[in-house]
Length: 148
Image 1: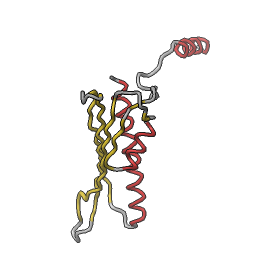
Image 2: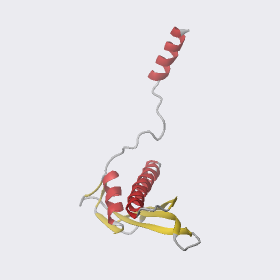
Image 3: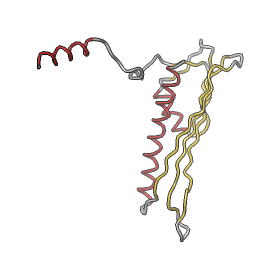
Image 4: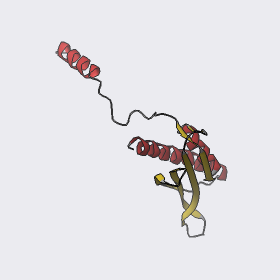
């Protein structure tokens, strides 16, 4: 029985099976012009994670717009915030020099959470949520670009 399991394991291990989206890495993206607007820290994290660089001999341009909002979802009977909703929206658009649109997609993620008594902990938690939402959107951008 052990020999059979060993043979099956060796066969499956050596067959080269690999999940479709397991390879998140792809070639570096290069653009002649990069226009960033909105939340600077979110834009920088996306640019660095996707390995986007500026190169003069490329004909494509990139427009990246991001916004992050913390909104009060509900209040308690005294009027204090009870729950918040954090929403991150990123618009990713590439064009040729002659304004022909190559790729245009808007990504949006949100997360709802309870208020904290300690405001410092609330701000730290909101920063963790922002980082998590940025990572989720980066994953979506990678999957979307890999499917092109």
